[in-house]
Length: 145
Image 1 (cartoon, one colour):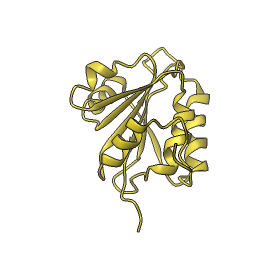
Image 2 (tube, one colour):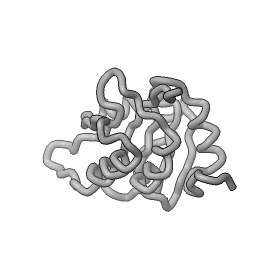
Image 3 (cartoon, one colour):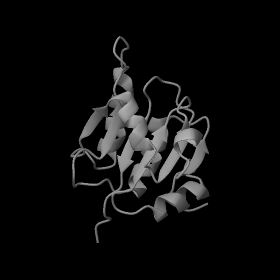
Image 4 (spheres, helix red, strand yellow):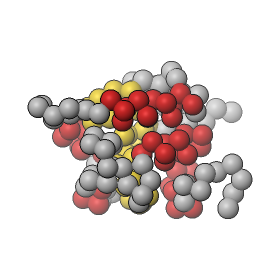
């Protein structure tokens, strides 16, 4: 056990997060996301029973968001005819704000474009999130000196 690191962040997660470089992306995937299929070139870890918002709250104090090149937080758009649960994005926004990332823009991406982007991620963490459209991509930035 390490001081100041949430017990939700496993040793494998901590190792993978520390190996990520500037511009690398992390997918916090919901329980329905095809992580093993899309993560063939990525590190794929599991965080069963943990929501994306709770894991985000644990990771963001350790993870610098990218302040260059557009929104460093990306969620999935609802499929036409479907609806988003506003609580999902609000919980992600609250975690980002709490960690000092009130400046960080969040954008939505069409479902299949999101999947294509996820295939290029460095790390995918499959969570226990059961809310629809609960997936989130984070782009890592440079840690300030």
